[in-house]
Image: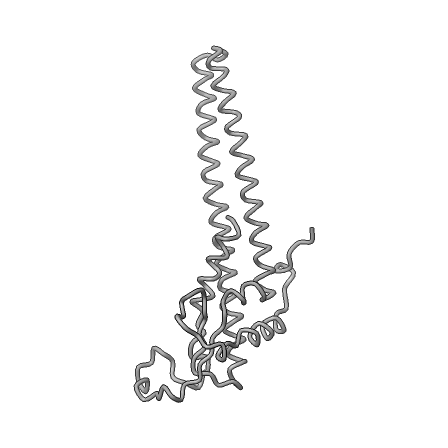
Length: 202
């Protein structure tokens, strides 16, 4: 549930974002017809730094805080119930050693502890699933916002290819083709956070 978990997911989603062939008038990559006729010397290429998007795009910063808070709440909830269960189990073992229960009582309490354990596992799975769903919604919203912006941005720029640069996925990239600052500025200008996307004030 930690910050690095959903950051990794988000970076992966961002890196897989359709940043290629943003010029809608050009043939798409999967359309094999006419692809062979493209002259590489006529290609206009640019790239965007993923890490910079993640750290400077207001949407990413806002939603990171939201997911971090949700993850922390889940951890606290599960940790609290786990401690309660451990305390109850330890108390049960102590009472058993002191012969404080009849056999029937001990079996009943043990069954109750087992049920609590099963309930805790189910809660863990449910909360983890909810967190995963929320993270996937964030990743989709991130992809959609970038794709929408680039489609508008590229009407004037006319790039044939806009690549996402994450880590060393590009072995070499001339800084002259870096449009990260322009993209971040445009994304932040277009970003209108909803009430849900605004982190709760501390």
